[in-house]
Length: 330
Image 1 (cartoon, rainbow, N blue to C red):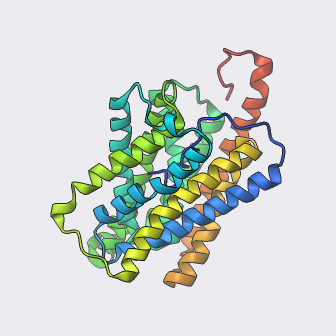
Image 2: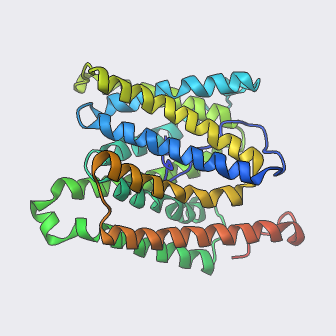
C-alpha cells in the first residue's frame, strides 16, 4: 500500500484514529520508528524473494489480505475495530485504493528487476513529488525554500537514474534494469498521488477505515489477476508470501505506536533509516551493492527531504503565533 514504502516513498498511515498523546518518551518513539523501518525492509525482502517466481498479483494479494490480520487484532485490542468499517465516501476509498494498487504493482515489479538499495533510493522521490502535488491539487502554499529543496532532490533522482537511462541500457544491454528503475519512479509518483487522495479522505474518514478499505480493495484488485497465471507456491515461497503480509501489518502497528511517544517532526526524520537497512539486507541476502551514483544521488535526495522536514517543523512551531488561518510561510 505505499503503505509499504519505508513504504516508501510514502510512509504508511498510522492505523489508529486516536490523536497521538503529547510526547513523553521520545527516545522510545524513535526506537519504535526504527523498528518499523526495519520490519518494513524485511517485508520488502520477502516480496523481492517471492517475486522471482510468484506473479506480482499473487504477491500483492498476500501482502494486502494477510496484512489485515495484525491490523484488525490491533484495532480490536484498542477498541477501535468498529471505526474501521464506517465510511461516508466509499467512492473516495475506491479511487485512493486504485491509485495505491497501481503504486504497489509498480513497486513490487521493480523489486524483481533492480537491486533493493536502488529501488529504495528511487522511492525517496515520493515525498518530493507529494510537495508538488499538494501545491497543484490541494492548494497548499509552497514557496522558494521547499521548491528549491524539491529541485535539488530531483537532481539526486536523476543521478540515480542516469546509468539506467544511458545509451547502452536503452539499446538493450540493461533493458530489464531500465524498466525496473522506471517502474520504481512510477511507483513514487503514484504513491504521492495516493497521499494527496488520503489527505482529502481524512477530512471525513477515520484512519482505520482508510487502512482497512485499502487492504480489502487491494485484495480484490489482486484477485482479478488470477486468470493471468497464479502459481501454487512451494513451501519457501508460501513462507515468503505469509511473512510479507504479516510483517507489513506489524510494521504499521510499530509505526503507529511510535507516533504516540514522539511528535511527527521528530519521527519523520528516521524514515530514511530504511536506506541503511536496505543496504544491509541487499548485501547480506541478495549479494547486491549500491553503485556510486546511487549513493551520491541518495545522499542528495535524503538531504533535500530532511531540509523539507526541518522547514515544516519550523512552520509548525511558528503557526500558533501567526494565527489559525495564516498559511505556511515558506
